Image (tube, rainbow, N blue to C red):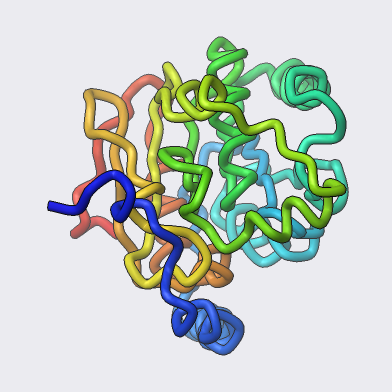
Length: 246
């Protein structure tokens, strides 16, 4: 059994170096192998990009969700450079955005977060479970943010070398939201440690393995099918996924 120190180690550099090319293949595969079927009920879905991700990085995913029958929305905050200022103040603003979507639609909102964006989605669901239908994370290392990802250096660069990550905050991030939660991960992820992206199995939480690169988690056909399957469940009738359905 791996120790705590080794279980959450960042992926090998070989996998990291292969990420850009693999992401291109994942995107090309989605253009030829992923055809949207209108199975959604029109409820709002907010998509949060990963660290350094601009709105265009999730545009393919949002279009696929829209074509599948959901009201897909960008998170509306431009490039994701990490929390702007204190985390709680930052989350206050994101919660206000969430509640606007909720009030406008008159329905609960599903949250999809890629990498760091998944941290926002999980924390918002803990703050406002009355407004959140479910949370789906894509390659989000909530179980171990420190030492488990190659993105730490990028985060510090974008934030002037600062970090708000404390042991207390790390423990908080590991707590599962009180709403149906799906954690999507890939053992061949070249950016974050796949073990740190797994949620424990409970009555309303699950983890689903896919074969995508980290950068391709928002375009890979398998991921798109998993997302639609999860989002298409009737509200209040969430069940763990049977992989045959994907």
